[in-house]
Image (cartoon, rainbow, N blue to C red; front, top):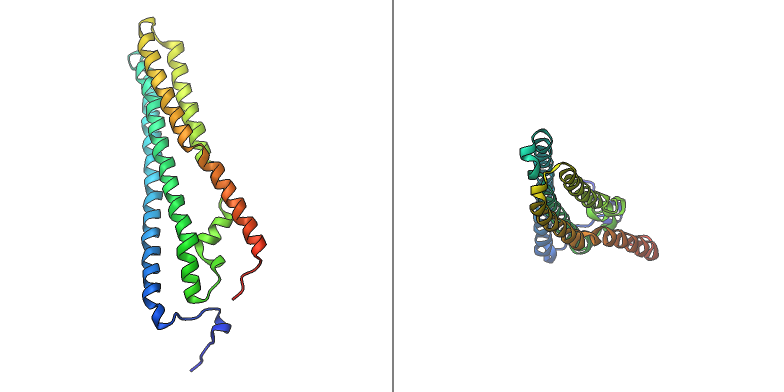
Length: 207
């Protein structure tokens, strides 16, 4: 029977007293992974619903003058779904950060492995800086402004009061979404740069 040492395999079995701790962190890791997968599927649904609803509104407003004023709902819907998407990203980031900074280092320590080879830590080094979030914000403004501009050039004079009220409320909604979530992309970029500098200063992993 061949017995590989920990030095040869780069991996050690946890001590008997560590079994409970290992099981605890493994359970947390599975729960976090499940929650992250749910968040990803949730964002896919939100993006699909937003695309379908906005497309229907634009088509209805373009083919019928009676539906033109329905386009005032575009900024509201765009702001609502953008907020849902960006909030889901924020929660996903929090879950990934806890996995990367707490769970994976603890499990790596228990098993005597390199924490840099754990998935969330490795993925964080290669992931982008959150450009898709910025895309959603820019799209929200482009779609909202486009809908309001189209109404402005095609509406009847009798609709102007209702238009001003709805356009103002829609603009406030988009401004609130931007104010709440615009910093997420820059914070993610700064966090990634800080993490990279810390890794470069700490040197290679020592077992």
